[in-house]
Image (cartoon, rainbow, N blue to C red; front, side, top):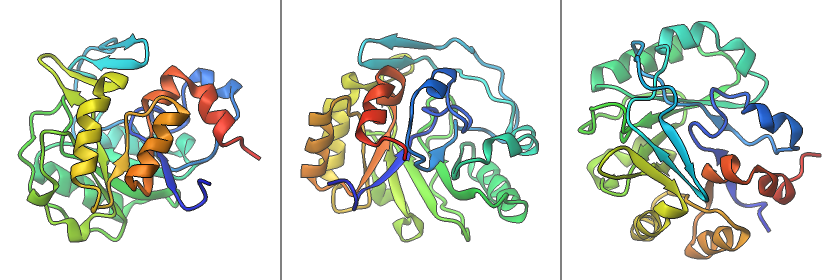
Length: 232
């Protein structure tokens, strides 16, 4: 029943692309993997700024990354699978990274995610969608409007965590607001998100979602993903 649905591992769920250590013990399907979001320059943050809350995850602002150039120079180990690079920053920094990806793109990189809602980067007023020969994915949160962007350049809209007073919430605690957001924009190529059970997944499909992001569920219940789509 899922043959006409496009699935992706959402940004961060597979880390930098190869998965978390516990994923080695679970048979998972080889969906395209959106990497953790990276900025142009290195950012020193709080490496333990994530807390599991049962079926949800709380992300405290300030997660670190080594910067795009450092990541790109060490990307080869992550290319056993189809990769979508997630990037964030100012409009100019986005242009620089997209240009670099276009010129030095490894063959397994199949797309670029523009994370215009990253709670760790204070550039939430991005409006410019760059030109690219690669498919572009736009990542927004439920407080933003897709209509503010040139969607003719966008292949898919991903839904980010729900902003809260400090950081952001994903998973079941984000479901109510994110599902309302999805329903409001279901006529766009928006991905189903914030699902935790098979029933949740079927509800997203009933809403009309043709894309599904596999995110928090891969961290809180990865065996469910393996059961639904066992790797052949």
